[in-house]
Image (cartoon, rainbow, N blue to C red; front, side, top):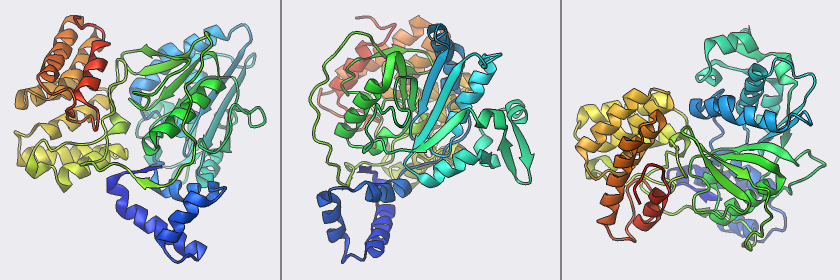
Length: 439
């Protein structure tokens, strides 16, 4: 498990609580327990739940849900029309909003589901979250991504909460599940022959070899032609095996090909807790815009400006990564008011605006970023993505070629702003596979 730098204090608190609960002498004895015990499932759960962000809400990613509604789900329904069966797994589903969002999309797509066998399963390591998901009762906070029309159609108010319609609630099953320790495919738990698996913003908390192992298990659990959707950039630089990337303007998805493959040998899955590599700030992984092959993961916030590399910009990224979009935007606006000539707050604000679906405003902000900092590679690439989305391949190509030219002027092993430990050469390799770029 990887622990982000901003969570160091929380880690110390959680470890202290576990030391007391287990009546151990101190942290050293606790870490020895983690590294030597034959079965650490319970302790992994005790650590993972408070250290990972379980916050979610209905229709959280408007671009992804538009892609599901208009492309992915209709394609899967057409492909499975002869057997009239569709199986969907929402892994790390937290309190169930994503799984129920899928059930609502299918209800909108299908006039009659009575002739179909549709199975939607949500799993999460947090038993309390699963209990809440099964109840289907939510507060206002869960609806900030859902239209009022949808809410009125699928929920009814009860005191200060909203209760999901029974017809939708019964279409989704929930089970506790540990992606690391559990074996799947597994017919006993229903984890087999899935047409669609969603596991978003979960791999950021895991070591690379663990991500690869789970991705392989997901692949084996998919039916031929099945689709895996992860968080933006979470599978970059990982061996995809039988998965092939499919590029859409809204996101990238991975489809299981029919041809057999032999996955590379994996490192032993003996996971111990260790700090993540030092970085300046949290990754905005929950809000990255992806519209081509996944970019190298944006794992941290660089020192774009010395006076802004401290707590304020750090907190803005942290708010964004935890789903607190309004607070993140407010922080950016305050930073811009203090120093309007620094590019980074404009950039984060562009990502937040883009996630809300206001692509025109996002373009304006990205252009402002480039005006303020001509070397801001990430802004060129994101602006290129927006042009590509509009069908303006010429401008998209120009943005990407500019980013490529900027990178070629740098040492190949240098790191790139907002791309964590990814080198110039790695980002160049990514750019070369983008559409609308001259070779």
